[in-house]
Length: 216
Image (cartoon, rainbow, N blue to C red; front, side, top):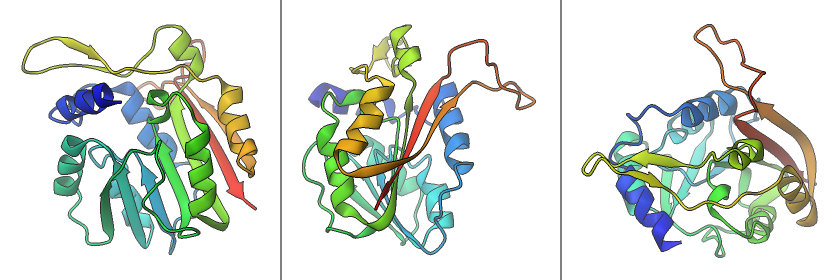
């Protein structure tokens, strides 16, 4: 995973200003997901430059934002100088430095494609969620991955296109991973690109897959 970390450290310098349909659709989908955030404590996985953190903390009472890229976290803490956000450097494949049953909602966006084994992530989410808590994940759709879609960027310093190492996970892997951890599936969504008027382009494969689980 050191190559993934290094890639995101490089990308952090331009991540927020690059043209990125996946990033922008992800933010829109999260904000319309209807998550019950008011008065809740949120744990965010792979917060990156804080692209979603700013909105999450505007809705929730507190956010713990985790990422394993120092470059991304540095950008995020500058962009979202809110005392209600706690920034943590952590690799989500390993045990999370978060107490049991301490989060009402766990949110992860565009991060699991970089992880080969999803089981530890689902197990950790189940551990840190309070009873009735929700796990929301939004990822690059497997259909896009099978067509060659992958997180990538152009390095501003060198002009080189950098492809961030990724793993293809099927829809069933996301669904069954949560079920195997003892979570109940609430909703599954598939999200297409939108034009300037907000209409969806449903003739192309969906860009994003979202899954919502509840800890019973």
